Length: 104
Image (cartoon, rainbow, N blue to C red; front, side):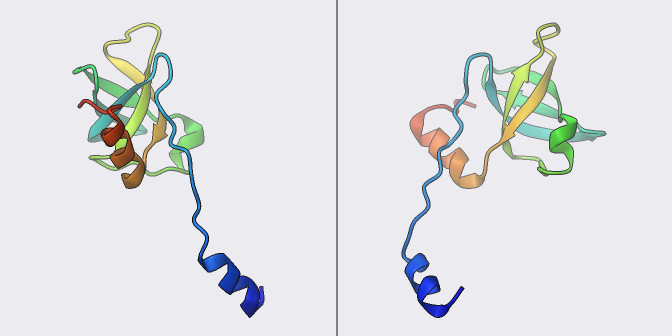
């Protein structure tokens, strides 16, 4: 990349869509990391669930306490267990809160 190409790209803004919760998905806050890909999540429906990080996310996305995540409750034991689908960045979670998706 030469000098002219770098100067042209500096003024551009990149817009990214925020993944909103779909049917059956609930946003939540990570309360505690349990180890072995499991964590405690306080969901928007005021329940605390055990979340499981699927194998395809384990090494790619690092989840810490206090992160806003999106979970999908299991078809059975739906009040107790769930799978983690998405982790929101700080700016994405601020946007979700402003738009009213987070009521935690």
